Amino acid sequence: MNSYGPFPGARPRRLRTTPAMRRMVAETRLHPADLILPAFVREGITEPVPIQAMPGVVQHTRDTLRKAAVEALEAGVSGIMLFGVPEDAKKDAAGSAGTDPDGILQVAIRDVKAEVGDELVIMSDLCLDEFTDHGHCGVLTEDGRVDNDATLERYAEMAQVQADAGVHVVAPSGMMDGQVRVIRDALDTIGKEDVSILAYTAKYSSAFYGPFREAVGSSLQGDRKTYQQDPANLRESMRELALDLEEGADMVMVKPTGPYLDVLAKVAEAVDVPVAAYQISGEYAMVEAAAEKGWIDRDKAILETLTGIRRAGAQMILTYWATEVARNLSRTV
Image 1 (spheres, rainbow, N blue to C red):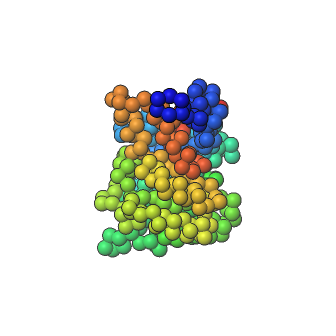
Image 2: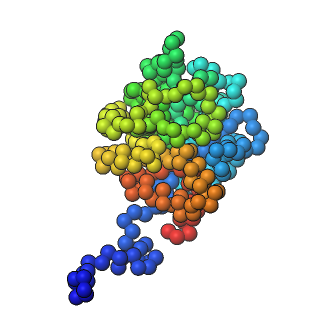
């Protein structure tokens, strides 16, 4: 007894006493195989172009993209998500470069496939926004609205040319109603039953996409609030989830992550398919900017954010730090 009563019998701090103890009892473990590297490849450049709002990230040439894919593979990263950036002159209202077999994204898929084969999962963004002169994720009606069903026809074409180029996974990110079913049918029609669909199930209209628009040279005027989800809504995500699964999604994703960990956790609890999360450009930029100012410990902050995403239920994490973090983890795993 002390003057304030009995000493505690239960002492959770006993399990925090040393690094070895903390490692042994850790409930969540981050592994290189959990990570997927998003990468941008730009048409018509001979040197990588730094993305100012994302220190350390570049728009790749075809050659440097091949190198980045090999580095990711060697670090233990599981996949690479490819985004194509066409020359401005090739953008049009229909996003024609997105369905051109010789468009930059299809060429990049073939390049990476030739370099790493099936050892790295090659994923491709399936959306029109990089390729349209108006910057929206679909084709527009005469009065400027995104035409859902006309866009689905374009997505079907995109899925087929990406599959023909050798992609393992297509990732429709446009948030069009019915996109998963149309893409699944389009792939099956050409005998590409083995190509998987990673559905952007809960993609919110977010302020944190800002740096990404620089990364893909976006031409967007206005916003995407009529098709991306309202940040205020959670039940809506569960409805989107049910529809994507019914339509044949092989994997599902929540994007962004930081402000939506509750959504991620609820999705992960509800499904028996793999769940991904995309730590987006603004989340990356905030950590890098604060670290540059000396306000936070960069490496510890990166690991903490990724561990939090993993703890919330993500089995796969798309992050621009994928290769760097995988290398660091490989030294300790």
